[in-house]
Each structure stands twice: as C-alpha cells, then as structure tokens.
Length: 121
Image 1 (cartoon, one colour):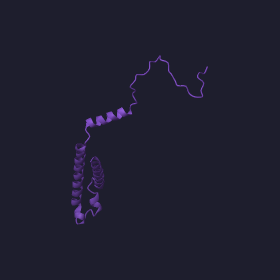
Image 2: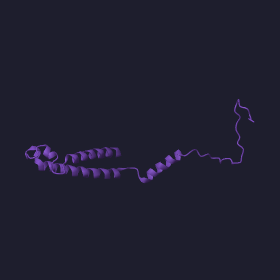
Image 3: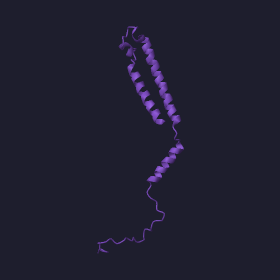
Image 4: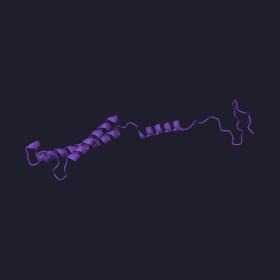
C-alpha cells in the first residue's frame, strides 16, 4: 500500500512542479503564450489564470492528503520496527559458544598436522 502512495506522491509532485513552472508571477505565463490579449482564446486570460491557481491549490491539498494518508496507513509501528531491528542485530552477532573460553594461562593444544615435524627447534 505504501508503494501506491509513494507513486501517487511522486506523480502529484511532478505535476505540481510543472504547473508552478507554467505560471508567470507577473501575470503572463501560459495565458499570454496562448493569445494573451485575446479573450476568446482558451477562455481568456482570467480563466486560464484561475485554472492554474485552482490546479496549484488542488495539487497542494492532494499532496498533503497523500502524505498524511501514507503515514496513517503505514502498518509497521515503532515496536515492530524495533523488533525487526533487534532480530537483525542478533543474527549479525558472531556465534556465542555455550562453553566458557579457556583461561589465558592454559596451554593450547593443537592436533598434529601430517608431514610437519612435531617440534621445530
């Protein structure tokens, strides 16, 4: 489910960037590119500007709703994440033998290796 929300958030974000880039802060932008002074083209300057404003606000609201929805739908709680992390740490730890280690002053016994002299002096 989070993958769906992630894809939707990316799509809405890209659309939002494109809509914002189309707008011109001085009143030009897309409306002036398609006829500017002629009110008959594309519904006129005012309607194009109104559409871009409404589209911007709609995409911003959709983005906030998707982010909050993704946070609410996320199934993993903090406790579950901690449990998973603890299991991963325990799996990564080296093997813990059940017998205690030999004391530091105990002699080390090694099995003889074939073809090697028993002692080198």
